[in-house]
Length: 116
Length: 117
Image 1 (tube, chains in turn cyan, yellow):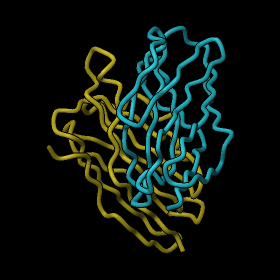
Image 2: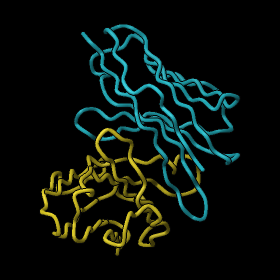
Image 3: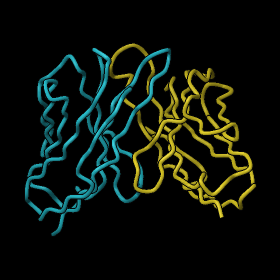
């Protein structure tokens, strides 16, 4: 069974602070894919990143960075120097692929509020 | 280029009515997915198409839910005899669906918010 846990339900930070969103996953697959999505108040899920299980290199994209650690089954997301526009719900997701199907299993999301 | 579009954006239905929700995937995307998102929750998988073939419908909550993609492009999710527990946002996503890890990236539409009264 696949499972994604985002233990932080809501986080509030003051603008320019750094913030880390936690994600822990469970899977029996040896090859798997992890994702982060952003859902702003408008409601549309915006793709941020895909990480393959066989590539443990951490990734940085501007103010965003991701720390993937297979040993602890975690895929954490850090926003550096947060801005008000970062306010949104962030979802971590795990791709299940098997029996000819592909589906994402999402965590419950972390609501991030960046206060000016 | 154009992203995934969905219509209507909002739908109010009286309990017992049938509804049809439409999804236009990104052009050229082979795979299409439907998810249901309840308030304050993450999206949950409903069904998956590869071209016109529905390869997985394990997430459909009851036989009142039916999805189709007859020409391998536009898809319709139909809910018959709607119930209050069907109130949710219905999200459609598409992906390239070809070989390679890039094809697993799913791009979502804005969703249809269904309210059953």
